[in-house]
Length: 267
Image (tube, rainbow, N blue to C red):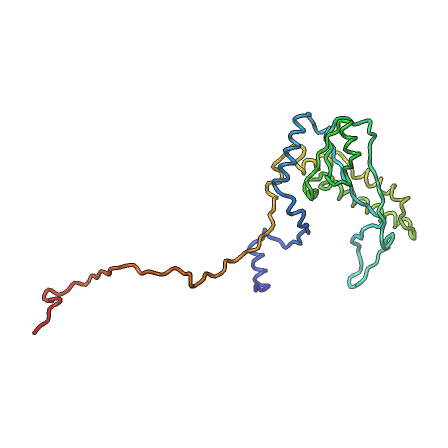
């Protein structure tokens, strides 16, 4: 086993390497995010964009995420040596509130809608409505939202950080009061208005390879699960090949004396 001095010397020899804690990725996501599935998606996307002439203003993305009335704990300054540092939060266990960001259905006709392929996202009623109103549905491959969902890539993280700051600000300005469903709408609206912009939306579609269209966006990211190394069993000695020595000749560079009669005896 390598010792710590070997580790430190190794890190000095390779300054481009750093010790990192990897992000946990489920087995479903690792196996589902493969070249075959993504190629199917981009093939369907290319076909729809060419057939119906969908430009950037005609491509929409839909998804869902959760928000809670209990804010996440952020780091604070505290005296050194103090083992426990407390902070007041809204409740021990939070509740989930549904917030729907929607636009009037009369304003949109004939566009491409990209979303998740789970039945909770696309019901039969929603599917029939899209067919009736010339809305084309394109679903992402299962378990690939961490790579191919535009909202997950560039928008949800800044939104939740902004919402968490609004919750912290509310708790500081209203001591002794918990955040209820009545306050969530106002807090979420402030966070959404501060976060949502055209730049994040455009970067999300670009990061997913949707627009500008880039079917090779993830060529360097495909990861195949590690396969166990199976050692071959030892060969049966009874079935070992028989070794047959070859006929070899040895040549000598030592010459015999002129007066030496090989093969004769003196009497």
